[in-house]
Length: 173
Image (cartoon, rainbow, N blue to C red; front, side):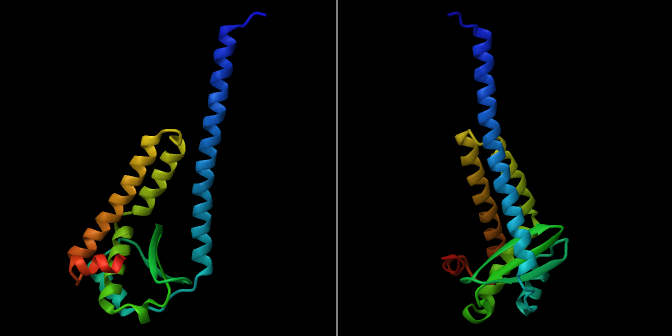
């Protein structure tokens, strides 16, 4: 029985490529599924009434795109997305459970994400993670970058907001 070393190397490389391509396709599928979920959420969620606190926050943080407010069911929380038009998702009955100052801080934080194009940065990051899915430092770097984006928007909310940093930290918890 003779073994051709070149064929063994070629087979190992092909197998490695197949495993890598499977990981990349899984990562890209997760990204596409997330984008489709956000798109469906935008279509399904009703537009929120214009909160005067949002208008005040828009005067402080001026994104360079139109903003849509959407209401989604669930506990009180907020998130934002920007792809062409900025969208701020708010859940729960924030108007009843949070005061104007707290809602203002939340809107400042979310509008800062939109102003800084964080959605696009996270989208690019998800593609990079898909390509380098096998490398543990890629996942570590991606998590640190995501935390940095959140901390940067927290800093904007504290700097431009109306409550001190301890009250803002309580709001996050």
